[in-house]
Length: 292
Length: 324
Image 1 (cartoon, one colour):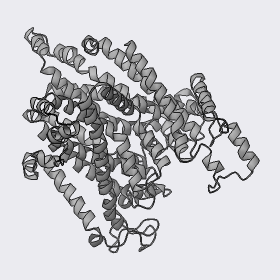
Image 2: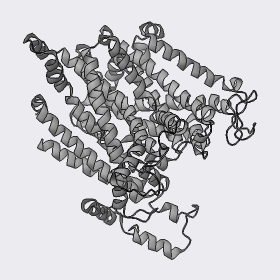
Image 3: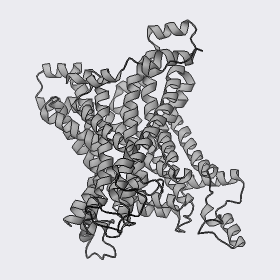
Image 4: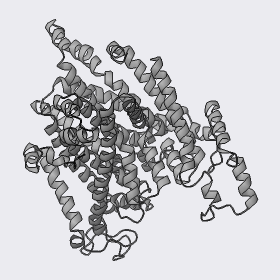
């Protein structure tokens, strides 16, 4: 088999063409997303303190030294918030890639092979999609441990079936196209035909899937940390909320305003940015939607 | 249909078997916390340890344990909780009503609002109201549920103090009448149920709206319109009825959540439902509880899907032809 060409190149989707197809929502989403990425890249320059150092008084109120005050251990909340991007973004990206890779593998094999293999794989997908994910997520998190890598693996393991189903449907329909039949009749192996003729066609679909999966992964990572099942050493936004809520009587004072609210807003903003980018990509996929 | 039923039984058996073997394959056996010398709950007396293993049947061969597990699954004997030392079936019995109250209320409300709103939006497809509602639904269904809950908790619970902060009812309360009890439970239900409704509403609205838009473009709608049927009849009698078909399967997909509860919401509001039971059981590695809950969940979820398939075939005869 020849060396596989990179699907993205083949797709004919250049960043420029994508950008012109984006609407206002996706444009706004991209800007917010880019801001988060910049904050993550330049976190050491932007953050006033090291988020692990005890630089303030415990539970210090916001002031000129600590814009968002300090947490119960005396760590600067603004710095924690800025460094939080370095957890949410990589985990979101990693889990999204994992989800898509698994989903594409199963989906394209099932769609291309058909027959009993298709039946078996889709049966597994059906079962996995009906079982409630959240308890499974908690269970896996407890079994597998609580590192960031584990978090990514767990999210990928639970959310690939939806992707597999979409990819399978696309592969199935592409498989019937004349040029794909031709390639097969000329003796192209399944791997070759999939990589050369089918995957490039679903490039935009993959891009959309990645963005959606990333948004879900960000929510899930924060959720796991929020439940106390995340990496206890990684200062993520979810963990910040957990620590804030663990303080007895937090809601009876106005501390939630600078301790609980900012990480929650950051998570929500990041997820919404990803959602908006996804909406733009979806419109790009389905020009029919534009009419309405 | 018969073929489907057999397939469901096979699936159920697979899930039950996985439910038995997975915890035994993964690190830490059911009594790990009690038997692990590193753990804080380690039982030092070797005799007690052996007795514990014998009590939970862990000293028997795996196949014998498996047989006992299947027998228990059929007879409803789900073992005892290691953490609380109570029968698992009783634990589920005391937590499930709370969860059903919460998820039932939220599912009902979200479905009702979603169906009515979705149908209205689709009917006026393209209007400003439709576009605003659709955008709002996408946004709402993507905001993490724990954030929504937190905001409501802070605003209505802590700041305005209109509603209780946590729990399913007032602790140690003694009620004079069933009515007072219902009022108290209802007051505690509002915040969690509203949060869950908010989280569920978006997807339901979008499902109904998009289906209805599709149905409105169908030929039979054109015929119905040409017949001169009144708009109300067109909207509710013809369009919505057909647009609701996928809703049945959608509801079945929520059967699992209806049983396991909303873990985030129950944790946040300290609601005494199944979500908390699962969460605490996982935290304490209380394997009999985890296994028991998943057994119930798997059974209910698969039954709900079978029921939805059957119902869909009844509601839409076209499906039977296609599936064969």
